Amino acid sequence: TLTPDFSDGQFTLTFRRPEVSSARLASGARITLEQLTSWSGPTVCGGELGRHLWVDLLDMPPATYSDLDRRIVKPLINLLTLAVGTECPLVEEMVSAGSDHPWLTVHQAAMKAPADDIIPLPRILLPLAETGMAGVGAWLDSTCRLGPLPSVVARVASSQDDTVEAQLLELTTVAEGLHRLLLHERKRMTKKQASEARTKALEAIEDLCEDVRDAVQAALHHLMDQSYPRRLMDLAEHVEQAVPGVTGETTEWKKRVTSARNDFAHKLEHGFLDEATAEESVAVLLSLRWLLTGTLLLLTGISPAALGDRIGNHEPYQLFLAQARTWLPTVYNSSGGSVA
Image (cartoon, rainbow, N blue to C red; front, side, top):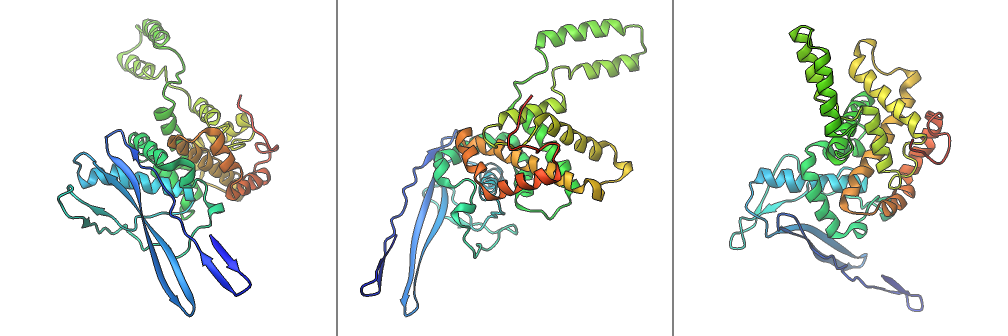
């Protein structure tokens, strides 16, 4: 808090360090935020108040450095990147084998120097105040089973260096993967129905050659799996409140995403993007970026309504919706969306 006294030209700066509660992970480890306050000056030009933050993971069961990197470090980088909307690389890291052992500084090529610019709070999609350390803990517990999928979404969300085609291939694949892992209870039919269908289908092909029977039998193992378009509809319904309007007219959006996936995955001989479809493809790509970002951020435990308020008022998201209405009017021809 800065308190000016205009009568004599004095200014009083009051800083109160925010209290951030720690959280327990499923492993029993405790995650907390260590805050170190520093002050330089005063000089004739003034002074500077700074705050250096460490994410501390304490009381963790024995683990290798590779496990720490895979289960803790990389997921934290992904969460920060998605929450801030820009790359948040590893800056500093220290490890210790226990309370009686010293802290050892870790050096690796992926580390970068701290950023010079501070991102203004209005530009941050999901600040820590919205989730607390409990949300960070929930994220770490939830994303360890998602493998590289959050990393792909975070990379696309923070950088536009790759081609549209490559990013579309990645995100259309991630969409299916996240559906399988997060919405796995949504099946096309019950186990009993699938078993009955397999039995009748195998009886009907008894007279065919062995290779054909084997091929049909292999295909029958996937009877319960949702189709790709149905998975898209499930994901759209899942984030309908958390990412308002992200799919526009959802049935039309589903067709565009499915078409993009099929075109890039199965029709490579016909070439890639041309000028006529470039803007449409960018709109589809950005819609997937925001949909998958919302899907992942819900794993912090934030309510869909609260996340919807954050995303709906987020300037980059509002810009996406404005662009999408121009680039893809058949899908984003109104402010609202629908899931059918």
